[in-house]
Amino acid sequence: MLHEDRLFPLENKARDLARALYTTVRDLPIISPHGHTDPRWYAENEAFPDPAQLFVTPDHYVFRMLCSQGIPLESLGVPRIDGGPTETDGRKIWRLFAENYHLFRATPSRLWLDHSFEHVFGLTERLSARTADMYYDHIADCLAKPEFRPRALYERFNIEAISTTESALDELKWHEMLRQSGWKGKVVTAYRPDSVVDPEFEGFAANIERFGELAGTDATTWDGYLEAHRNRRAFFKGYGATSSDHGHATARTEDLPKADAAALFAKALKGDCTPQEADAFRGHMLTEMARMSLDDGLVLQIHPGSYRNHSAEVMARHGRDKGFDIPTRTDYVRALKPLLDAVGMRKELTVIAFTLDETSYSRELAPLAGAYPALKLGPAWWFFDSTEGMRRYRETTTETAGFYNTVGFNDDTRAFCSIPARHDVSRRVDCAYLATLVADGRLAEDEAHEVAHDLAYRLVKEAYRL
Image (tube, helix red, strand yellow):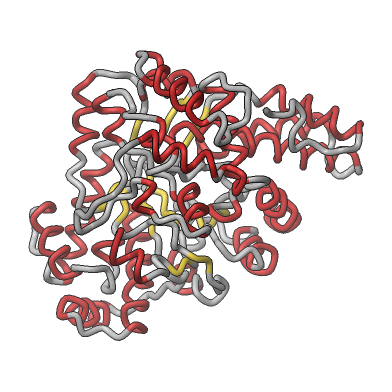
């Protein structure tokens, strides 16, 4: 199903060079520093339930496309928060998916899925309504075998390290089970404190109460609240965390006087914050997190620019993270200035900024990362985690920020079997771009080989301290 030279340049000389570059990085170990695979998979190491539970129900890239054509999420097995009925027959879900597989033509999801079907499960005939049952039976038979358990696939995919992402309120019991298991795979957590730094997060005051209990401090006072973050960050570091992750609506940062920050926190606990005040508090907490990173070494990831849970109906019925997070325009030059004024010149700090607003790459993010020692550019992410998005990313950032103010690639996925596919796409796109630079005289061939290795492996390993 997959062309041997997919994603390489059409011109013969550049294509030959891209192929040669790719050959040197194709089999490098995978560093997956940010994602959302379930740590329970690795801890329990149980067989995946069925093909639908592996490929369809947990993957918002898949079910959002089907939803866009009027297919109810319930019919795809996506749980309802009220416990209401959803489809539980994996074969029915799979048939519905297969009947609509044409919807994914020319999308990144199609490339990832075909790669998984062919390279993980050995299927070479295209998925369709006609082949649905054959696919389902074959994948189900494979999933029953020990070599398709999560730990075996981790090793088969040549994953050197993978980071899951857990809420600041998570007890990390699956990571504890992993630690006790003695398995040598490197699965670490990442500190995601959105539920306790966002006054607009549902149940914020109750979250703070629970936060204090877990941290062993009174988190309802400003000093106790900051101490709770320090304690929880240390707890997460004990389970391998090397980063924190912040998914805010905007990139706004603030550096408020202590009294102002404490007053804003008190309003947040009472539920009295205006939207602007809530945004200011989130912004101030990014600067507080950056200062804590100077103390404990966690890499600070900022994921702004998403109008999360855009559909009120889907949010009410199915909850968060169900495919309705939509990109918005984002300002970085002014928004990041308070944080960068506070810590931007500290070379021992790493702040990785992501964007869903491509127009900001050449105008804002690349110039900022090309100047401030603390700031690095995250890879093309989410809606631009695609062939064209990755190519545009390199074209709009390299001239100003170079390669070495970027941090390689992360797959940011819940879909376990897509991890090698996504890294393969990234490596192919980068090699294609490097080949064009050599072909038009902007880069020497020996340098292209070194950069290809750095983009595929070294930069991400060093940036995330893995």
